[in-house]
Length: 107
Image 1 (cartoon, one colour):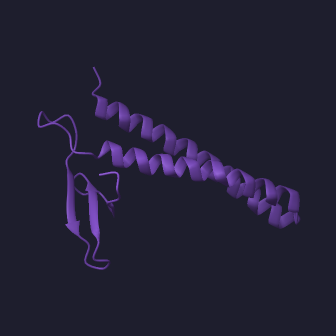
Image 2 (spheres, helix red, strand yellow):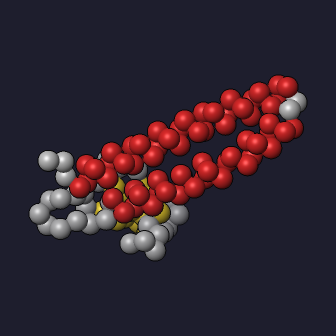
Image 3 (tube, one colour):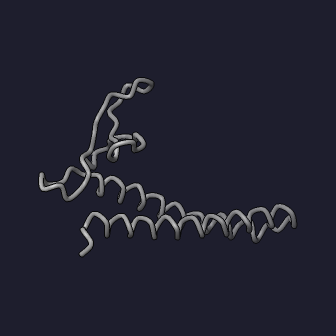
């Protein structure tokens, strides 16, 4: 049986793949609109950008929720905090070797 953590990771993976596919298509359309000087197509790309932005917000939220401290039974990763040298603000890191991200009010 798959753990909840692994299910959340799989869902995150699917969302990222969906966002990547939309981004790839938007980039192709943007290049085509520039090459053909197609203002209508360019506007369609701009309008479609909001869907990609919503997926990005969803991915960020999902990462933060997945990284929340879990019960001591080891059902998920711990969240590590440190002071960021360059910006001086709190940072959160998703597990060992993960990228540091701003620790927002979600925590």
